[in-house]
Image (cartoon, rainbow, N blue to C red; front, side, top):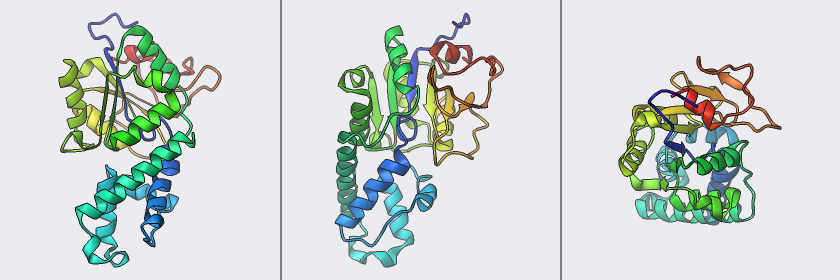
Length: 259
């Protein structure tokens, strides 16, 4: 346990890529199914989506793509009503995928959430995704009981400026009366890392399929996953307070040593 003045008071998770490998196998697939239903000749490939996922927010992602590929759509449908309707249907499809258990949870997530709950640490999720999508994923991979352990789900358009802006993380500080130094964020992308750091928070990065190779130099630590006792993680970027040779998976005690 950290003997300094800073103690871990909040553990905050991004959703997509952190809780589950949702971008490649979830959201991309749901977008493509929604496009097909709408009669659009669009299918985002795994590699194409690698660039699209850098745009925070599903509606923003579609709008950017449609603006760049205007020839794929009649001009009268390039409006907010069309994009919002298409995104709503995509969210429904994603929710249905979660209900069928198509997206497995990432290593260490359930374990560290249990640990935080047992210690009375504030639990929150901060995501640019639609709140219904976030809740459906959490319920599917964690169960309704663990979902109820979260003190806040901050998602979608709850703030005007999305990551890499710090707004959503600043909202958590305001809501719970926290200092950034008391919070640890689990992120998987550079946009998320920059948002957390701009809010003055600590951040550990668990790289995901699309974020491998991004610049995470500002992160407190970078790992392949949070790991579990029977499935240890790989440390990609260590921390001076942590003995990388002896750590097999991330615990709250390890996070507190980095505060």
